[in-house]
Image (cartoon, rainbow over all chains, first blue to last red; front, side, top):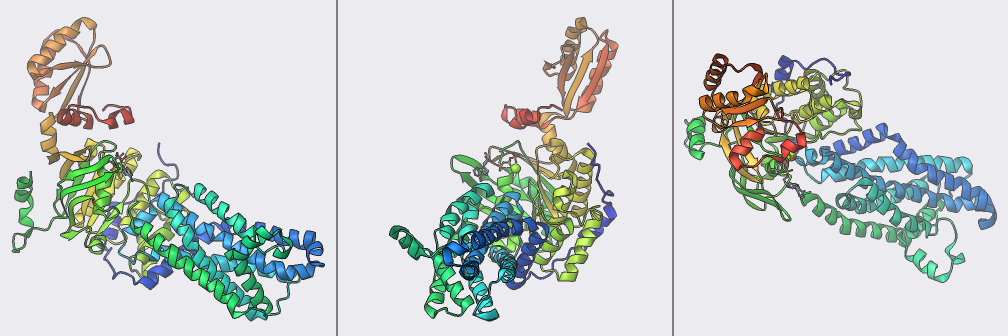
Length: 278
Length: 340
Ligand SMILES: Nc1ncnc2c1ncn2[C@@H]1O[C@H](COP(=O)(O)OP(=O)(O)OP(=O)(O)O)[C@@H](O)[C@H]1O
Ligand SMILES: [Mg+2]
């Protein structure tokens, strides 16, 4: 029962030295705690790049499939269809990645590292908000992948670089806000698998029963009603508008308002669950 | 019980007019989970400095007590103070003095050992370079330098445990909670952990340790509280506790079946206690209150016709402590499936 890969034994003088030199620095401020948790999220991307690939692979497949299989039939030509489809696919892939926020949190709680964070003398909400900021980097990476692919395929946004960047910024705001649903669920769900399943049940109808793939005009009326109130459709409309330079203030305001509502509702719920003991 | 502690530790603050500040002081601490009375009115006084052991079987409430003291749980009743700071009202003051190594290793499995330590160092206020230096120092001290750049998921149990403890002392805490730090470790790794704990105590950290093993509490702790079903059922120094259950058990095995009755009679007479049969038909065991009695019993046996094939003088096990204190065996015993 010896560990075969045991390194040199710790030696006692070293330990005494290390113990004696552990003077407590002054506690970090909330901002640097936030940055540190963000840094941790980046390390996770470095060690688990497959999480990023998992969630971008399907949107990329859809992008290629829909553009070339149905583009001609749905919009007359593949290149015309791509102009409409790309912002929607972009929104879809990033919004799907937000699920991992909850999954990561759930794993942290299971692994017990969350309890370790909770015994640190830091501004406690930074554990969650920092992770969300780190996730924003993940969203940006995924956005870059999809947009570059789109440009290669012939996506030409009339709104120019500024339009595309504003669309991505809006998407980040919405995703950050949506993440609070998953953080709340991350506390409630027993395992990351069940959390994943629950999230998928919400995400599939939300993203597919929308205006991403086809014009809602072609749908039966009862379905149109849902598509029209679906927050995700509003996000896609605003992003298309920004990318093609036709966005109205109203379209953008709706998305910002929805984001605010998500935070106002699920932020406090998350924080309540966070404070309530496990 | 409190009186003894006052006598023993009241001298800490002899020169100040304030009352001595204990590392931990609880008063009627209660925590229920639904029907389960996990902690059911615990009065615990842990003096500053040294090692204090919480000893108890599975489900006794050890982890819950530690979680209450580390502010991970809120008490349902009673009060708890850590170095004079109330865990409910002054959580931040408590958190800045304690550190917890939980029952299950709690580091980020996806990150490397080095990244884990740097992360915690930064969260404790170290600068970027300071954090890296601290991590390098700790990895070296704990014999993890070579593994430092590997993801923790590739570590062995002993390495994980060491990293976990290193993570808890990035900043040397005033009070360190160690929840079953050696469960599941082989003897070599267990000894290493014991050495680490002793080094911490030499440096002035108070350690509150939980364990299911009387031997471990005996080796390490200055005082022990025995917990069962959320209550403290005994408290004292290891010597006091052992004295209350007798210093151990004398096991003998005779060579032939005919000699059993004679051996039983002799043991019973010299040790003045009942003699029990072991699982082996040829073996007999009797409790001895001190070593001298055991020697006397041996002398008697050797002067008689009884031939001894084998003998052992065992420490009282946790199970015997429990039998003595509660008149029922522990669940831990059946879980471990072995007797000492
Ligand atoms: N979060 C919880 N919800 C419900 N019951 C709990 C919870 N935590 C602990 N318990 C119960 O409280 C009792 C005490 O548990 P605790 O973990 O404190 O015991 P322990 O002494 O640490 O045991 P072990 O040696 O097995 O770790 C047990 O009956 C346990 O099932
Ligand atoms: Mg426990």
